[in-house]
Image (cartoon, rainbow, N blue to C red; front, side, top):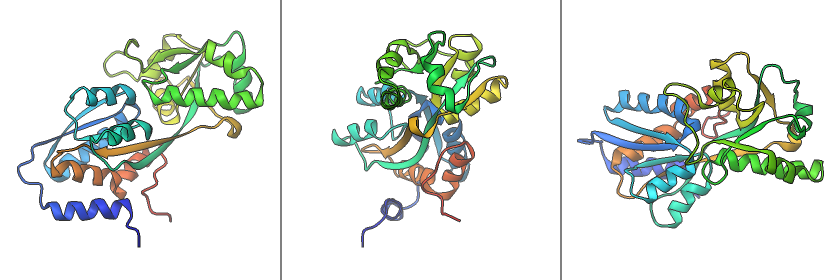
Amino acid sequence: MRLSTLSIIGAALMSAGPAIGQDSVSLIAAGSLRAALGQVASDYETASGTTVETTFGPSGLMRQEIENGAKAHVFASANMAHPRTLEEAGRGGPVVLFARNRLCGIARPALDIASDTLLDVMLSQGTRLGTSTPGADPSGDYAWDLFGKAEGLSPGAQEALEEKAMQLTGGPDSEPAPEGRNTYAWVMENDRADLFLTYCTNAVLAQREVPDLQIAQVPEALSVGADYGLMVLNDAPDAAWRLAFHILSPAGQAVLADYGFDTPGLPRE
């Protein structure tokens, strides 16, 4: 009988013994996980007495930081590709699917938009369309996947959308939001785009900060899902495995669900 990933990690933790003398663990994670994993890390600190040093940013750039020697014990990416790249390079693993997300549109208050008109609004010459940066941030890659789906609905749409999309966030040279501000709320509040494609979880957080913003659901024909991957790096302390297991546990998965993620680790009722 094939063991589940949780069973394998659980067995590893049981054999590892108690986390004694381990004062800190480094967690590097996707920016879209800042609020949710920030809380999960805080919960783990309270339960274990181990400090979690967190760094959040675009997953592709975070992967590059790890490749360049950044201290990292646990890596939580907004896609499966970046952790798998590290795994294939012998840097750690296994890579585990721990959450899912999807794309939504954030729109300025006056924009006339609905789910069934989203593509028309994106293609409209007068719409300033914002995305994150493909390659550096999986949110941008998922937006480009959506553009590819648009081609099947409206010939020529993919090229038109790729040409007009403004890559406003997630890149190495992207202007950061002020400390404490939600990136997407700040971008929209400063009138840098009429419509911005990002994760639905980001859209919810942006609307909490700027309530007048609209959230446009992506229609099923254009819908793009985002699979989030988790891995433990080589030579990480036992406490890093315990943190990973906490993220995968019902307690950690419940926090992610509260922030709008789809959580494969929660039992079905």
